[in-house]
Amino acid sequence: MKFVSTRETGELKAGGSVKKEYSSQNVIMEGIAPDGGLFFPAEEVSFTPDEIKQLKNKTYAERAFFIISRYLTDYKQSELISAAKAAYSEEKFPLSPARVNKVGDEYFLELYHGPTSAFKDVALQLMPRLLSSAIQNSRSQKDALILVATSGDTGKAALEGFAGVERTKILVFYPEDGVSEIQKKQMLTQKGGNVGVFAVKGNFDDCQTGVKAIFADPAARRHAEERGYFLSSANSINFGRLVPQVVYYFSAISDLDLKDGELCDIVVPTGNFGNILAAYMAKRAGAPIRKLVCASNKNNVLTDFFNTGFYNKKRSFYKTSSPSMDILVSSNLERLLYLIAGPGQTLKYMSELGEKGYFSVSDEVKKALDGCFSAYYAEESDCFAAIRETFENTGYLIDTHTAAAVFAAGEYKKSSPDGVKTLIVSTASPFKFAPAVCRALGLSCGEGFFAVDRLAEYTRTAPPAALSALRGEKNRFYKSLSAGNMYGGVAEFINA
Image (cartoon, helix red, strand yellow):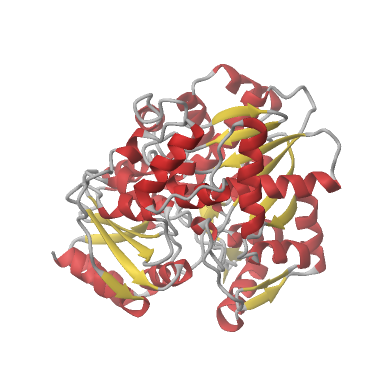
């Protein structure tokens, strides 16, 4: 399998147009394409109904190997099997990486039973192993310097996944006032000699824009190379982050026990569009998925886009109780546009977004999107009501991001009340956002671990052990940067 950039239209040469192609190991090492686009397979991947049925009797690690081996074809099978077994061990995920839990009439895909209690663990326990193998196989003399922008969960999951991994260093940037207290504590106390964390005075989009600017800066790349590093990413702009997410949608389909010919709908809370894009990739590859429902919070840029065909990042930014969705520039939407509109139009759209702050898709593209996606957004009051009503009606506790999906699922079913099974993606432990969840339940609680304790007491639910273990841990990282000086943090980190 070869990969191309989403913005690669091909160079005119004798005999026709030729696209630059890359191997999957190159793609995972480099993270982002040289032209600023995102890497994507040059060919479609597909699975037959019989192959999907065969997943039923496999372990999660076996399912992961079976799916990712179709995309990462230049890895040895033994490397992929070993990586999957190590990533998805019972020690890492005691309750399964992707548990389908039936609650009343709803199905929840619980993706938060890993080391950091968020769905990013499922990808970021595997990706470091894929990157490590790629470095060894490339015989590169340089080590990987991994730069990560986070809206909360990716940062800790990436730090946890890469901590202690040979031939890597990882530096995380997070919005100083844009993550929960528990998320911040998780990052600032991270152990490991190869990790670093900086707060950024700005929002997630500032962090993400800064990281992309560093990747696009030849001087920054040269500076890193002179010190023995090549730049890479652990954000979902890196295909190595994305492909493990495709796995859990196939896994969930197997656990739903759909009948022959039966389809399901999937509701995904999303900000950067990686999680729902993985679901769309699974659908294109043969998973029996009818519709994908994109759930947003008050930062409803994606809802507006799917409903109108007009993407506009020039709008108010809101800090909400679901900070991992507080995003106005959804990077992985570029990959969807590439699949629907092609590289030429994608380059045009991305250029317009960079220059003007907005773009509009054609009627043809809008029609194709309508066939696969619906979109809804939840106000803060909607999220709080979803948390409260879900707990009061079923005793099931959800976090603020999952609440947006529960609300969106309810709105979607009003227009599609046909009995098709709906799978709601649950992305984080409610204890990571305990103060907000307490407020939704009408509890007075305080912040941080005061809220964790109050929530546990009221709901008679134990917080994840990894979160409880943070109590009393001392912070290791204290520094903050302006959004315009993020490379200063990189230089400090690699010179230390």
